[in-house]
Length: 87
Image (cartoon, rainbow, N blue to C red; front, side):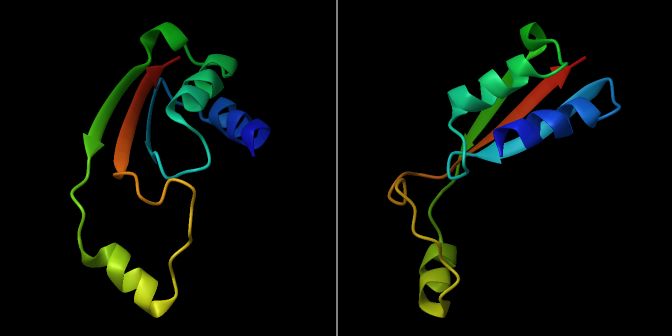
């Protein structure tokens, strides 16, 4: 997955890139930073903004209808990261 993500980032034809990613994804925050370092983007321009989400009924409802995926960090708060970087 990692090589494909780097390939995708390098294929984007834009001066700036904004990417939203959460701590419940496949990569950790430090792994995502490393991925940006390996891409064509100027890693010195990387800015990361974070937002901690408040728990709601979505998790409870997903568990009831069977659409929930159990993960190692299931009990962790959901943190959304916004990565902003330029070429």
